[in-house]
Length: 334
Ligand code: AHG
Ligand code: MN
Ligand code: MN
Figure 1 (cartoon, protein in one colour):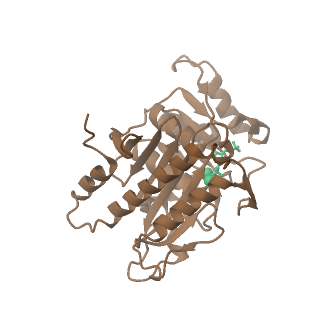
Figure 2 (tube, protein in one colour):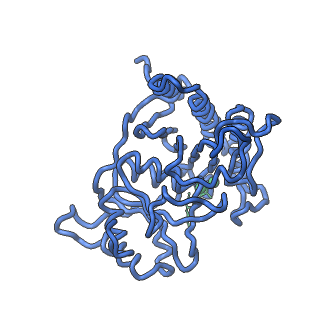
Figure 3 (cartoon, helix red, strand yellow):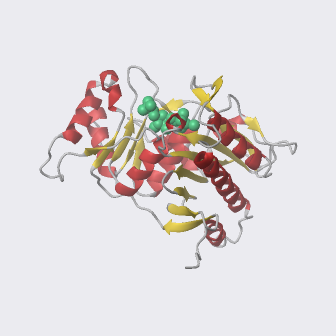
């Protein structure tokens, strides 16, 4: 069968719907998709090359850096930094904002990414992934500045993620629905497999690191217990699934519904995940698919990062489960 809807054709077809568009964003998305193809190949072959170990460095979050974290970061910084479209980049693996090239940050957009999410799972055949989001500079007449990353998720121009698992997938949104692609290794192209993904209104799966129960607030414990009770109006107690790679847990939640949560707790009062390049892009995707994403009391998409590496809680998934969290834990239904 001839794959008529490859990712690049789809992106360009979407662009043609906006006659004034310069095509810059389309170029960027195609560049990102090339980056994730390269990372996917690195992840798949790392075992043969002995690349599953640590670099000996610790990143800004205090995590030990894996060789693959660093390699994935370099691929994206080199590829996207030289594209001419991005003023500045933020990577989970770099302490400060990255200046792109000698053109003095003239690009129209800024990009934040987690080059390799779930890298602690490398070496055990568990999926990992890449997450990104793109903002337009606050003022296009000047060079990009760090403050261009301090925008709410409602200003995101495009966001997406890739999962390197049993297949390599690429899921993205530019604000007109969420579209999913699968890498066809025989032609090296992403092919459209899931047009306009919508999260079910209610699901049957919950996803949380229950090893943290002792640190949770009583109301979070109560919420998770409520999911485990048999409920006559539901299909029964929820099923638990926790991969420990956010992209993989999120991808399942998006497609099957239910809830993923990493709440604040006594050990991590600000949350575990990163706001700018984990929570905000995924919240954008989930909302575009008809779902919800909150940090507890507030909608993630309305938060404005004050620090590029700021932590956040994340509760995301089907509207039903996220609303139940809001009502049990925060006593509100908003
Ligand atoms: P990263 O590998 O990019 O540092 O992200 C790790 C994150 C995320 O992938 C996952 O959901 C979470 O860490 C797992 O945390 P716990 O081990 O605390 O459950
Ligand atoms: Mn991550
Ligand atoms: Mn990472």
